[in-house]
Length: 215
Image 1: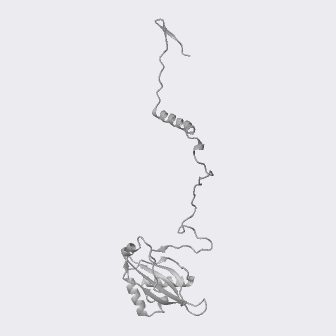
Image 2: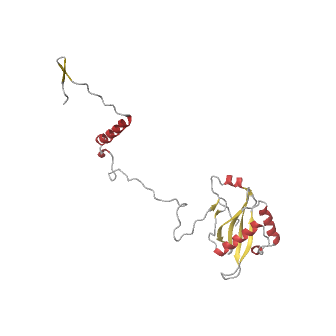
Image 3: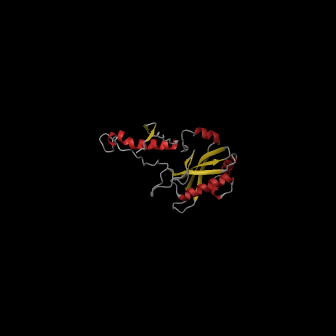
């Protein structure tokens, strides 16, 4: 109890000092008050609970987009795609045919008309292709879309890329002899006219339009 004192025969109480709280303390007290009084204002029964009639459980989507999903054990590895010729790599072609096709494209890009893989076609035709490809100064090449055609040949989509232009085409190879051990031979090469890379980017900017085969 507060001690009483006398002044002039009258009792009086000493003045009560007002507590002054700092700003951080005011924030703390305000937060505690909110936490303590919120349950009383809004009881849990006021909110719909999962399992009650008319209340659906939250949907958790676990489906991974097909393009990002890792291949299953019985699936082929997903390879990078070219904006023009589509998926790169062996495709559905035999491994030997794919290696042979890469050797052909490599020889064309290097301008090696004497390469053994090009010997099956007339030298004039090979020289024309090499001159056309050399006109874009190819820095790299791509091979993809391997598949077996109705006549038994294996076709691949090819693309040569220069600094500012590219050439797209298709080549056909076949295996000599009836057995699977026969050598692979170049059957034909078809090249389209060169296009600028800027034109290709504008064409495929919004809609992916894969390369249409000749046959």
